[in-house]
Length: 145
Image (cartoon, one colour):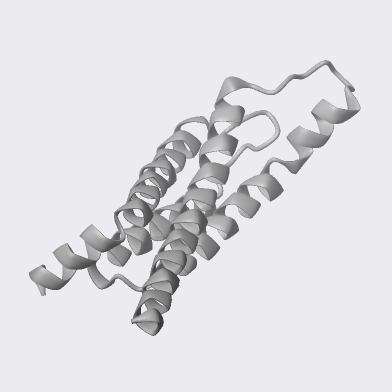
């Protein structure tokens, strides 16, 4: 099994780099949101954001072991759910800024959490797409020979 993992990792290195970055960013979201999630607009932390970010990081880590692109897509979907949950949780804050009622601006904590959540989701998706292209190229090479 170790030889399979090593061979798969070598063949899909770019895909695993993207997934690895996605894992790190998903974990950063967990810690950032837990540390800065309580604001005047949100008096409580929504555990769904933390849980689904952590699960997407865990599923991304599992994709290193099994090597299936479907697992990477699952990490993307869970990351997407965590991102959309974060946007839904902060929608009053975002609307308040866009309407300009009291001069509130985006805080660095919000921008960092938003960006990390969005990028984690995107890196999981790109990791799955890159692996799909690599597998597609292998099939084309096999047909040519």
